[in-house]
Length: 403
Image (tube, rainbow, N blue to C red):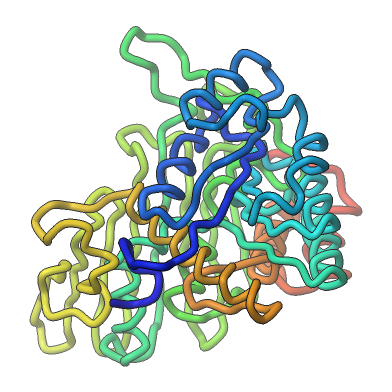
């Protein structure tokens, strides 16, 4: 049984506190279920909402005693430091930076919902605090918790696809354009209807595409050129982006992410083309990987196939033929984070091929800033240029929405 497997005797159960994540939030209940499903974590405290009724109702639903429910996150941090093993930050993205910084300064391990922060300046400051306090900071990029994506990475590492040549990565959704069943316009959370320097859609969706491509290939973005538009009901925000990306190792990529693509509930789809074969995976059919080989053979891989990774016991809460899904993938990530926290508590440092922190988040936000800068300039823009390039464009020019 591999590390992080479920139902392993004598594994510690870590105590969690949530900041944000009420029943009314988009991701709160998902984090609650994912963190607790394999008995690696126990939610014991929280400030789930600034609304008192929601805070109380959420605590009751999550089984958190009322004497450990707090009206504000600052109070939680004062009273729970030293009592919990980690704090999960589930508030809207614009508030992440301040909360994560306070937790790190208090010596509390942090698990933060992506995106870590809304700008490269904020993440650079968080990295300095993290290093100064030797802190623990993990960011929840949950899609690479799918066993079949982990299997795909192993096959790429073994060279089954040959040299990766180009990648098509897309994440279309319909949340800003589709009517509900009664013909009413959608009602997104208020904070999602305000675009700062980097539009919210980039922070919601593009961060996943960046992380997944890095996870699978190890390649890093070098240059981007993008176009963006707004097509749905909310004209004040960007809701559709197409981008061309040049990666290290000569890899080319096309990225498309949207919230105005009717017919797509969550159309996350990956197609990787190599010199010896190609692979395709869709989040709506997450148990299958389609591989095509240079000699014309085609193969469908699932957990019951001859596999290197996806057949591990930790990924088979029940036998193949009974599909796992989004929550189980998220649960896999929480098991990995528990393993990382164990390393950190024992040695003061941690590493994992499955869990990412502030370093990848910084690269990701620089890529997003470069996307916006390229839209403004109409030119290819360098990604990792902290004092120029994309950041220079963003600071020197007034933000313009295109489309």
